[in-house]
Length: 376
Image 1 (spheres, rainbow, N blue to C red):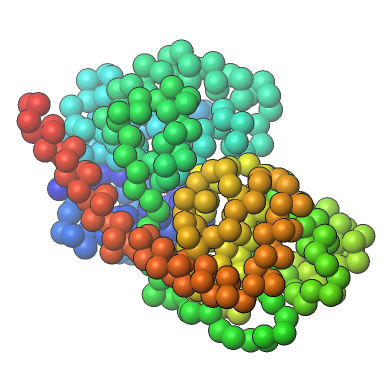
Image 2 (cartoon, one colour; image 1 turned 120 degrees about the vertical axis):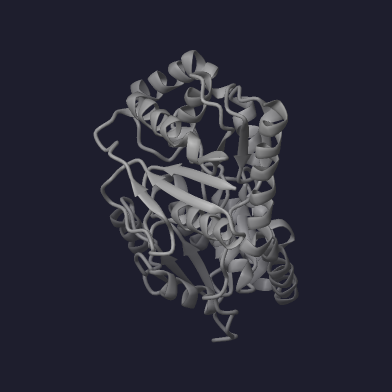
C-alpha cells in the first residue's frame, strides 16, 4: 500500500503521540508499504532518518484554515496514495473536508486525545474559545465528521466519548498505542524496607499530582515509602510549596523532566506507578511502560487508563485523594497483591507491543483500500 500520514509535527524525542506515530510508520514500512509522513507545520520537526518526512508550510494557519490546508495537501497527494491517515484530533476535520470536497481516496483518522471543545481536554482554552469550537463542531463540522471513512480510537473510552459527541459509532474501531520495549529494563529489587512510588507525567492540575500528594499525606505515618515525581510543568512551584507545607520534603522528590533512558531507570527502581488524573485519561502510555517493567499500577476508574491497565491495576475514583490513599495503602501492605498485579501487568503490556499493534493497523488500512476498490 501507498500510505500518506498527516500530523502537525513529528519530533524524534517528542511525547507519546510522536512516539506512537513513528512506531506506526516504521511498522508499516517494515511490512513493505510505502509510507510518507507529512508535518503540516514546517518548523519544530526532528524526525529520524528512517522516516520519510515532508515538511508542509501550514505554520501560520488558524484552526479552520489549517483544516483546509491539510485537505488540499491530501487532494494533492491522492494520486500517489492508496489510503490517507490523519493523526490526531487537531486535523480530523481535514479528512472529512477532503472527502466531502470530492477526494476519492479513503481517509481515516487516528484519535488518541480529546477534542479541544471537550471538557476533559487539558488544553488551556477560554470558555469563549471552547464554545466557538463546540458550535462549529456541531454545525458545519458535523458534515465533515460524517464524511470520514474510518475513525481509529486508541481506547474503548475514546470511542464512547466521541460517539457521545455525535461521531458515527459505526465508523469506529479500536487500535491502541504501540510500544517498543527494547530499551526498557525489568524492575530491580532496590530496598525491600522502603517502597518507591512513582508518578511520570506533566505537573499540571488535570494530571492530579496534588491529589497524589494529599493521598500520600493521608497514609499512616508508620508506613515506609518514598515518592518520585518524574515530570515538570506549570504546577511545579505550587506542588513544591504543598510538599513543604505538609512536611513531606524528606519523602517526595520532584525529579523534573526525564529522558527515555532516565525514565526507564525510574520504572526499574520503583515499586508501583500512580496515575492520579482528575479528568479521564484517553489512554496512558506510562501505564504500559510501567507494567512492562513489572510494576502494579493505580489508575482512575473513569477513562481509558483502567482499560489499559486491565488486571495489572487497582482503580480509585478520579480526583478523590481518600480513594487514592486507600488504593496505595492496599499495595503498600500487600506484597502478594503487588506481585500478582505486577505479573498480570507484564502479560497485559504484551498486547501493546508494536509487533501486535502494527499488524492491526495494517489490516484496518488494507480493509479500507479493499472497500475502496469494491466501490470503484
